[in-house]
Amino acid sequence: MEVIRGADAFRDACRSARDGGATVGFVPTMGDLHDGHVSLIERARRGDGFVAVSVFVNPLQFDSPGDLAEYPRRLERDALVAERLGVDVVFAPPEDEMYPKGRPEVTVDPGPLGARLEGAARPGHFAGVLTVVAKLFNLLGPSRAYFGEKDVQQAELVRRMAADLDVPVEVVRCPTVRGPDGLALSSRNARLTEDQRAAAPVLFEALSDGAMLVRQGERDPNVVKAHMAKLIGGERLAALDYVAVVDEATWEEPERLSMPARALVAARFGDTRLIDTLLLPLAGSVQN
Image (cartoon, rainbow, N blue to C red):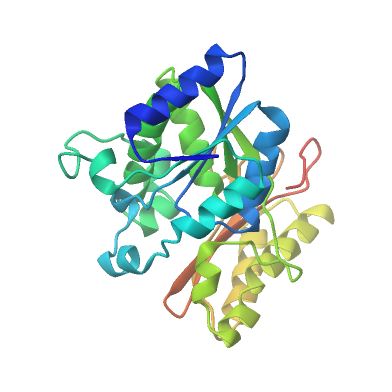
């Protein structure tokens, strides 16, 4: 396995793999690899002949300088994990390689969806995400890119960007990886205190309860949202940010649940903000 620091060298490695007849699979990360990342890499390994992983802590998507400074950077460990999983190339550029002139003047507008939910809670976040992903995709070339379902709004925006801008990258969404207690795996989980970690599975409990209501015949999304909000609000260590139910295809809020829909939640546990999501079990939908 090769660790590449330069953008041109990464582009050349991906091009050479395609020229040799391989399909290219790509897993973009900010490092600190956990089992959620492992599942994405394994999915790429099964589907593609050449697997590339990026490790880059993107400053454009952070709204807090402290959060950016505290984000774990463990490239040597991440490279060992990637090598064990059969990754061909790890692209780990320094910041001045990705942004040689500092913060770019031109960024990617995420559109109306980018201003809602996570976009409303973290203004500018999705513009930062899409800008760095666009740069990575431009280096990558024709390929498949794998994104986790936990960050489903991000994955949907990346998919829309690729489609709207004719980027030759297929965006593949993969199921959320959870701990035994249901908590979605995230690098942020390591910041939780012992008590906060014990409380955090309330997010999945609320989503599961919402799904149970729908399975039992509830079709009013407001009832589902109120139930999830009450459950999360009842956890003293959780500060609810939002609960939402959206149409899976359009991401609009339905008046009645008649098509596949998705529940989303976000809450803070101390200084750590966590998100989670679940596809509601309507006819024709597939549970993730």
